[in-house]
Length: 418
Ligand SMILES: *Cc1c(COP(=O)(O)O)cnc(C)c1O
Image (cartoon, rainbow, N blue to C red; front, side, top):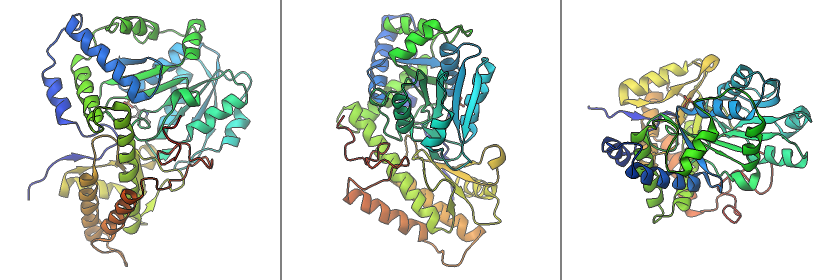
């Protein structure tokens, strides 16, 4: 049989064909009216995608560049900062903050879990200048409850800026930057945006822009004040990744097109899509005799799975690739061999999900058959879940922070009412 390569990886993610065509046709110079029209339009669309009144900036870098820019622009050497970490990307926050001379306090949760608000409250100091967190910790498939942390900072009258790496949170979860009081929200092109790696995005609150004036860590290429000034004129400070910006415009048009041209409504559909296919996947892997690595606070961006006892997760990664050209990811660092991860962010749909689960069943049945598990076990569970979800639009999805309003889920009945 022939095989079609398909990415089920949490970045890069499958490319939208319309975005690829836009990229190929982007033969324009960046100091022209033509580019300024494109850039201005894409920046406005990004505001809708981020769901904020604040400006969104585009940097030519992978997501880590925007993470670094938020540290270099908003902190000074010696600043006390708090990093909330439960995986590889949380650890990256600590590494960056230390590189820029911050005194780093850490609240950590074991891999596969999230921290409690009480633990964060206990670690928050009067001098804490910034709190760094992921909305979705891609290395473990965990969703952190950003609104609960934002509320904690408000309740404490904290001066700290709340900086959220939402690189896999955007487009997979409900995020209300302005309503919750998030000061920096960060995204990356190779995740929900359906385009290749190379762009990062960030949006900053007025409080963050004020802090920037008083902070004095070194910055040059990633001086956000320069980017903001140029963006106002429809340009970037340096030569931008023109082709990727054209691709981004096409992708945001596609997302808007899913909801009759309304980008905000299209973004909600994209989030709902990730929530549904991640729930289908969770149901299927459990029905196939495997265990969720993050059962209590699963991210809709990626599902991390523990294979049956004694099975190296690398075997599943390899078998899916060699037999079906389906690319998933192993665990990162010390989680290598322990878990495998399946992505749901961006250009995935029901059909992709069902096909993937079918392929996973083939691997399970051939490589480690188990009692009570047969062909169709995973598919039945996923099909039922899909049918239930489509029948009841307001299916309940519990919020990990324990708040009754399920604040961080799209299934929140008051979602969109704000
Ligand atoms: C992908 C990702 C990043 C960014 O990584 P880059 O390789 O620099 O793009 C950061 N945080 C999270 C949670 C991610 O998933």
